[in-house]
Image (tube, rainbow, N blue to C red):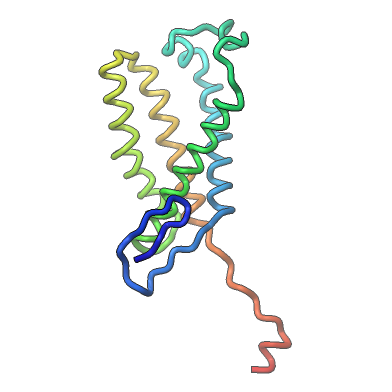
Length: 166
């Protein structure tokens, strides 16, 4: 049984399968997703504001603006998703960028698309807002999957003096 250290989950697996923590990959993936989110919502700003029933004046005012809470939540959420993609990728087969992107897309399809769809149907939100929000997460999962899948710890180099003594 192997533990995924970031979230404390245990998985049944063969004794030879080891999961390595890729802290730098997770941090990089979360930062990349966070930056992509800023660009994405800047591009779709007017449509997004219309979809949530707000105006640019509201956005520029201090009403409802809590940057530490809002940006902190966005970053922590991206980091948790990157951890999930990293764990599932490593525990289910070889770690490659292509596999991690596929796993990320399956996670997006199974969890994000379906969950947000259910919320939007009951909340009667505009289809345009649905497209903006799920579109961001679609590409966000791809970006994070590519980063955590491609990131591998480099082997420790053996100094020349040690290798010559062998």
